[in-house]
Amino acid sequence: MSLIEVKGLKKNYGDLQAVRGLDLQIEQGEIFSLLGPNGAGKTTTVEILEGFRVRDSGSVSVLGVDPQVKGAESRIWRNRIGIVLQNSADAGDLSVGETVEHFSNYYSNPLDVQHVIDSVGLSEKQGALIRTLSGGQRRRLDVALGIIGNPELLFLDEPTTGFDPQARRAFWSLIQQLRSNGTTILLTTHYLDEAQALADRVAVINHGQIVEISTPTELGGRATAQATVQWRDGAQIKMEKTDNPTTLVTKLSTQFGGEVPELIVTRPSLEDIYLEMIGNPDE
Amino acid sequence: MNKVPSALKIGLRRGSLEIKQFSRQRESVVFTLFFPVILLVIFGSVFQNTIAPGVTFSQYFVAGMIASGLVNTGFQALAITIPMERDVGALKRLRGTPMPASSYFIGKAILIFASMAVQILMLLGFGVLFFGLEMPTEISKWITFTWLVVLGSACSTALGIAFSIVPKSGRGASAVVSPIVIILQFFSGVFFVFTQLPWWMQQVAAIFPLKWLTQGMRSVFLPDSFAAEEVAGSWEIGRTLIILLIWLAIGIYFSVRKFKWDRD
Image (tube, rainbow over all chains, first blue to last red; front, side):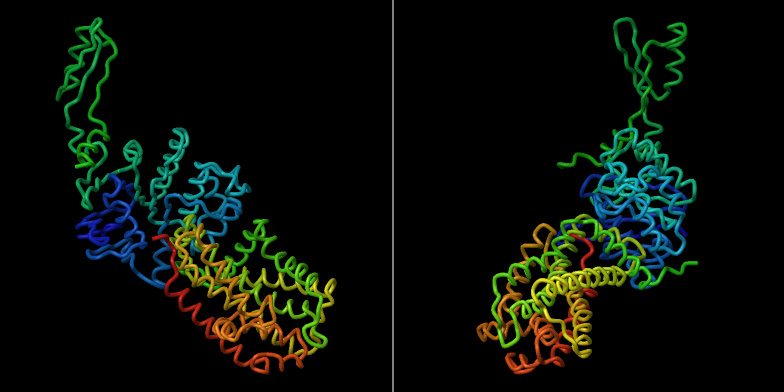
């Protein structure tokens, strides 16, 4: 059985059909990324999986449990998952160490507090009050609080919004490290390079339905799409679309006697494919 | 292995965390703990008359201030700060953990009780030192005092949590909550002698717990001879207990059934 199983999920807000018959399976140990424009039903879907929202119809199983479970069973279920939400800005008057230590008391088998703080790279900020942290450091604390319970499944919602490039890279390696420890991760993001760098599989959601599920390299037939080869020939930049870029590059190399000047080989980026899939948002 | 910590254990942890957080917010510490003392200084200095033989205004006022402190520190503070916690996503984050709602409520109750204890000690200390406040000597009065503070604090906490559903946002919460509390204070005889208020005001006040807390505190701090001056001609201790218990039940019911963890 899959770690997350969703069948025929539907959710309306009044007349608005936010999610209309969505199917999804996420396997143990993978990083799965949900992509989609604002209003596509992404957040609604994730919040239903997190047990924050009640569905109208369809079946949902997360770790073999219906997220709408209540009472003591809900606590046992939540003991096994971790959630990193968007924009949390609370508890500014507590220190990093105090907060992580406190949250560890909610779980049956928490990870070591010091280990978690070290692994999100906040060791030097352990005694600092939360309100003195930068945006990126705060986000790292959010992740620390999401993983302190040693979750089997981690929800990450737009984790790197507002990060500088260096902080993003560091954050990505933290996420990869979590996965290598066996945590399954459901990542929601606006950044396609983030999905490309992290996700084993991506799902594109639009108008409340799944458009396609694939690996980042194969999405939308990307792996087999025509490549564009570009090079300089004298004063001219030349460009050619081809199904066999290697053959073309070999030919050019012979022609130039070794190095091809300013050679670039590209395939459609994940972003190109994605934009094509979701179409014009103003349609 | 999957035995999650008990709600009470987490609740106690939350209590100490809430106190730690509160004690680091200087403005709210000053406001909550010193404001009643400042009011005592002002009113005690202005009204130096006696209300009845052997009853100074300060004596009467301290009873009212302790009762209204219970409402300010519990109901008012929670009905304003919980919507703020909701705005910044703190409540949603907690909702996503195995922490049960009851632990959150226990934590708040501990915070309110602890700050009430400090507030009352300061008020009584100032009253005795500077305003000739006389402390009760009978054990029975101290017993009444103790259950009034414990029950009043619990009642105020529960109603504050319940009322936190009403304000749409933290920013607007104060504008919704503060007028209610101030009007209730005037109606309930905190600032004025209750029996001198118009009849209809007394009737309205009798619906709400503050009037009963204030009257209960008067039974502790005023001589028994003053009971004859009350509306009912007695302290009505039994009725006070019942009314506070009813309000506590109402508060708990709405807190448990209707509490909002998220903005929408």
